[in-house]
Every structure is written in C-alpha cells, then in structure tokens.
Amino acid sequence: MRRLLITLLVFIALGVAGFFVFTDPRVVSPGAAVGTLPAPDIENGKLLFAAGGCASCHATPGQDDKTRLGGGLVLDSPFGKFHVPNISPHTRDGIGNWGTADFIQAMTAGVSPSGQHYYPAFPYTSYRLMPPKAVADLLAYIRTLPSVEGRAPGHELGFPYNIRRAVGGWKLLFFDGTPFKADPSKSEEWNRGAYLVNGPGHCAECHSSRNQFGAIVQAMRFAGGPDPEGKGWVPNITQAEGGLGKWSKSEIAELLKSGFTPSFDSVGGTMSAVVRNMAQLSDADRLAMAEYLKSLPAVQGPPRPQKAAGG
Image 1 (cartoon, rainbow, N blue to C red):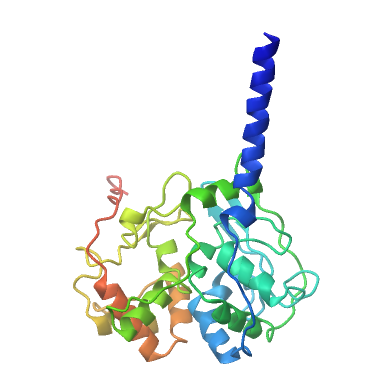
Image 2 (image 1 turned 180 degrees about the vertical axis):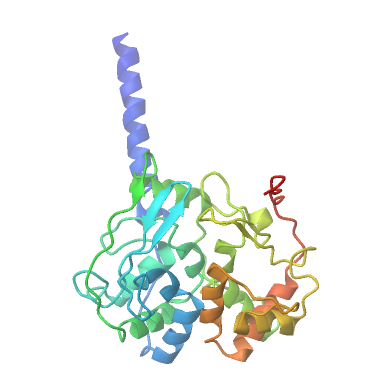
C-alpha cells in the first residue's frame, strides 16, 4: 500500500511538473526575435491601427474620441466576461512603460511584459502574422495618442477558465506562432490582401465557428457562425452560396469603404465599426482584401438556427 501511494505521488508530481513546463510562455509561445529595427513609420502604424480595429475594443465606451484608449469595454463569451484593458500611453494604467519588445511579445505571442499568458479574446492568434517592424510602427502611433487614466477591472471568469496558466495548454493545442509568409505563386495584390485579412484585419476571428475550447474550427474558417459574443449570427464570407460567391471584387471593396451591399442595403452591428476602420485604408488595400476573399474556396458553415414560429 505504501509503495502504491509513493508511486501515485510521483505520478502527481510529474504531472504538476509537466503542466508547468508545457504551459510556460517560453515553451508554447516564445515570441519573435526582435533584433534591431529601423525607425518606426508612424503613418504605417496609423494604417495598422485602423486595419486592426484597435479603437473598436480599446476606446473608452461612452465617448466619441476613438483615440482615447482607456479600455473598459466588456466582451461577453461562453467562458465569462472579458474586460478590455487600457492601452493608452498612460505610464501607470496603460502601456506607457512598455518597451517595443514588450509590445511585440504581447501582439505576436500573447504574453504580457510580466510573463503571463493573455487570453485569446485578445486576437494575437491573428496579429502574430504581423512582422516585428509593423508591430513597432503600430506602437509608435499609439504613443502619439492621449494618455488616459483608469484601469479596467479584472476578467470575470469561472473555474477552470480563471486559471491563466492553463492558457498555455490552449496555446499548445491551437496556437500557431508562424509569421506571415507570402505565397510566391500568387500576385503581390493577393498576398497583400491575405496579410491584411488574416493578420491585422483578423477577419476570421469573427467570421469562423469555434469549438468548445473557443478555438477556430479551421475546416470552417471564414464560413460564418454564431457571434462570439452571443449576439446573433456572423455571415459566411467564402464563395459558398449565401456568402460572397455572387459578389464582385469591386462590390466587396465598396462594402469595406461605405458599408453598402450590392442590393443597396447597409451593414450594421459590429460590422459598422469594421467599415469605419476599413474606410481609412487606401482603395488599393481594400481591393487587395477583396482579391483575397474572392479566392477563398466555397465552404459551408454550420446551419443557421431557424427562427421559432411566430418569432
């Protein structure tokens, strides 16, 4: 009996040790090698700020100035409530004391300056495609914005989701830290669109179904599904019927600029904020995004729930 107990304790100890090793940020998301970067391009940072929709989540709710990044927005999810943090240049409450390497680590590896995992409600799963130079440009632009006091409260997550270290296990299963690589068989325009859609634009984060662990189901990437915040249904943007199959490249680009569909309807909800951001890009960038979206194969997403009779 004593030998059995000792064996059991050894296995428990090995399990705990393995958990801490394989959930270590340095193991599952080591981050990009920064090296020496050229002087930041603030104008490119401004473009990436728009493409990434930074203000849509991080601007303080209830005020019109979208450059005041005091956070405070609440994101509902099946795992609990996430409170979006302050990313203004405030040195106490925001990211004013962060170095460039800290910001790159957060954006591309989902790791805080203190070495903790970020929850993937922060879409570093897409931002990781951005090269260090682009992320440094983004930080340089954010540093030009107003400093805002105030911190958001902590996330409201139940067990076991409140164990932040366990995000390392999630990353081990679902996080690919590979940066963007251009496809030499495709045009420069297609590659630019692929980068903007999959990287800073993080379109798949909303337009894809997720599994029970909150990770994108890769077989149904871009095929739509339930809104991650539980507020309706996000449409299919592949070439499937009911998606973008009948749309022209120019019609997709026009929607990203004005919000108008080919049937003269207009988008609403969270997509209106996306259009407000994408309208700040150049016509060439919007056409590049459309070029890439038109190349996506037709993928059928999950069946949309039927409305109840009389509903």
